[in-house]
Length: 193
Image (cartoon, rainbow, N blue to C red; front, side):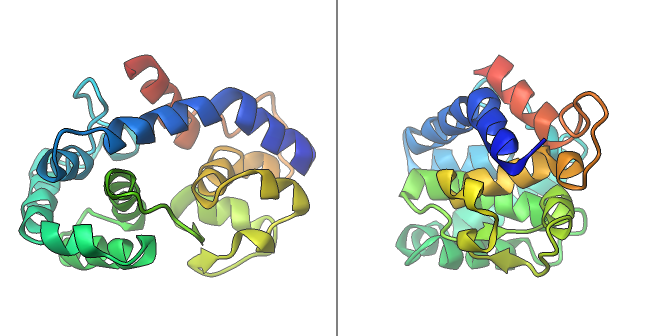
């Protein structure tokens, strides 16, 4: 696949589900409800998001308690980067809560508070996809990527790098990279909505 084909496939297959998921968080009835569902990593139908399916609920509940305690700070965060830092600090010391979960929770809470990422956060599968493009670090500007990615928001780029990490590395084995991990999580959300 070319980069243009990867981006076009993402737009065709995954974009609507991803946007619908964020609309669901944006329309939660209150900040505490949005924080609760985001921290517990629940889809709109109350099921666990595939990215966090293996994390014991008790750990996610610990994150929720900490986030509820700083809900005013989350609401006042200047931008997504500040909100992400607050979530990261709140999750610090809870073994089993990694960078992907912190990002996902921050992204979901950010949807409620109208704070979207302006950069691409690299963790787990996204890091693999970025490495295939010789990009390293924890955070990159969207313009760092090849031109076809300009059609995507930073959050969509994060998603795309994860879903298509194998294609990015040049692996082309009948849909590699779209049957587990990020792709599976996205398909689970589309069925759940």
